[in-house]
Length: 107
Image 1 (cartoon, helix red, strand yellow):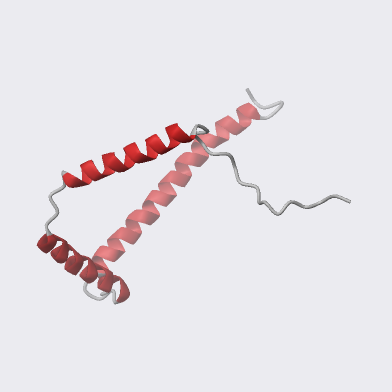
Image 2 (cartoon, rainbow, N blue to C red):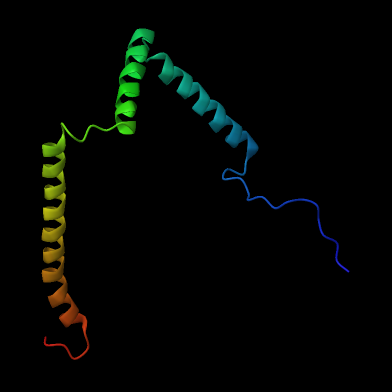
């Protein structure tokens, strides 16, 4: 009988040398702290941003289709037009390539 090991397999570390691995982690942490210390973070500006983003997300939950219908209609028509044009161009390009790639084709 064979014995089953209780240890789980884990992939080898990307950097095998532990000194190099910890030096890279420590250096990355120091770099991150230095980079964050150069940012001018303003609490009032963050509060205004949260307020604005909450209004945007509230608009997702209760969309206003009535007053924006002309913009929505224009966007839908543009999307459908792009879809049809891209399909036609794709077919026009793919037909000669298909005939050229087929065995015993016209070329």
